[in-house]
Image 1: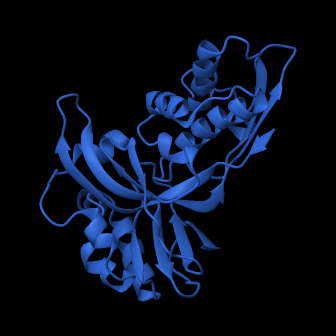
Image 2: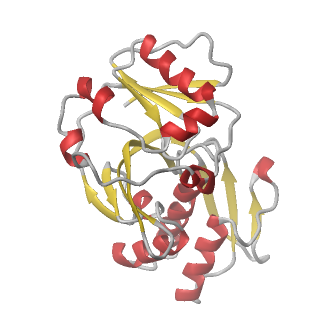
Length: 266
């Protein structure tokens, strides 16, 4: 059985406060996008088997492997499986690829072995895997609050818009991103900002990671500037970076970007 885990982008990202447990309360709109990995699970009579292509043998800390063990602990009747993963979503890029793979692993095991897990049960498992894992259990835009696990549907009408992604060679860890951020509860809520026309988002809808990440990596600031020069209606860094994205009415061409450029129609 195969699923195609989607990547995500963040439309706005507010870091509100640091919590006593060391995490941060955030507010962000998560949007699934057509960039996908491929994840296949097959029953195995030879014990656990892994085929992760160029990624090699996964460790026990791999999110997909951890997702299997969480389900196995709750449902001992689940047999060993062969897991085949082909990555197209870059890692350390702010696109949630690893989290999406993990959540889709939960969905695959539930469907393949007819476990009958409820959404709430899978949500609890996904939260144990990572704060943004629960989002990928449903294929729809959602407003994420708390540490990212408090989700509510947020309809967006972006049909026909063109999405441009710019990837470079930078790998920005979550720890690096949060290390320089300044939490702030000031300003309008994300719901208010997203209710404005997209043409106004450039001046109002911000990613709180951008100031210090762009200072550390000027190539990203330059890339965002190039997206606007090319005609983007809205451009930003996704999550903790390093992917840049743009929404526009027509395809964009960035001539001086040294990384990868991808275009999708939403």
